[in-house]
Image 1 (tube, helix red, strand yellow):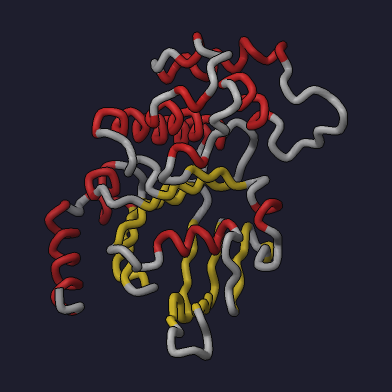
Image 2: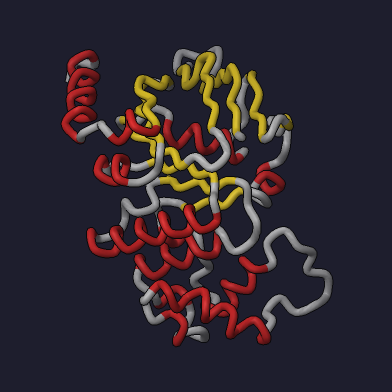
Length: 257
């Protein structure tokens, strides 16, 4: 279970450019939930993910994982149990290394390297079996540098690599936004398959309202650092895209847009 309790975060405090990002923000995500998060630009969606992962610090408040306070834990230690996929496919893989080398690095996440070899050729068959269900032909390109792959292929790899080792949470930051519609659909189906098979607790930020409604068992809408919609289970299933668009329109009118 993940809890954000009484989170406060200001940018440029004490200056004329001071901006309140979160003021007494609270969120509780139960184990096994797949939460889709929508909202306008600047609503705090990605900043919330950054706070969870430790990319940005909070001014006050607590981040708890299964009751343990990780608020002061460094980012790299948190990421040993968190898989994260970014909007940019280039951020989840190393372009100058081969598929085999990238998979080996992901396979060794959280483990000591010592003076042994990172790339273990005995694992080649295993990596190929992981890649084969993607139906992207990557299992036949193990010695190809990842930089030569398409964005969709790299994003599928990044998703797979982020979940190769045991993790407690999967964080998806608009991970289909940079892909064409067909490739985005493939990656969403892969996401859903991995989340269900591994029973992962997941948070997905997306601007695609259809994905937000079709996938996962809970939906949040954020606005100006606050959660203004929170539906799960049957309530989420009964939501329509027009319901979400209507709320977006109300927000736009309030903001003078």
